Image (cartoon, rainbow, N blue to C red):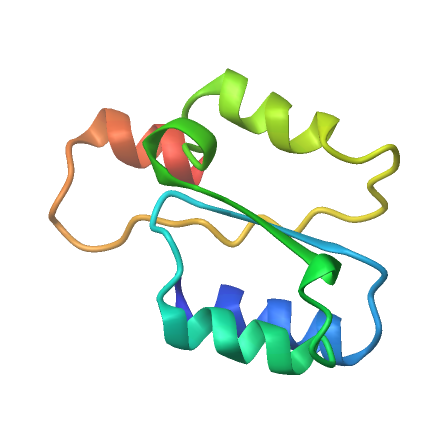
Length: 98
């Protein structure tokens, strides 16, 4: 998870968001899960993590649809995903960043 996205999740949980859905191709580390749990006042049911190539792949419509269908109501979406640097092909930058 990226620095900005992880901090956003912590802030939303600290400010008592009812539930936060996290969508990331990279599974969170145990340390990050601990930070989220602390921010959620030890109530891990307040956040759900969709991660990995199947569940957290922003470039796959089925992954995105699964996340959106997991909740009856979603009020706000923050798109924090981005590829940076000269490490990927143009198609991947376009799929993730736009």
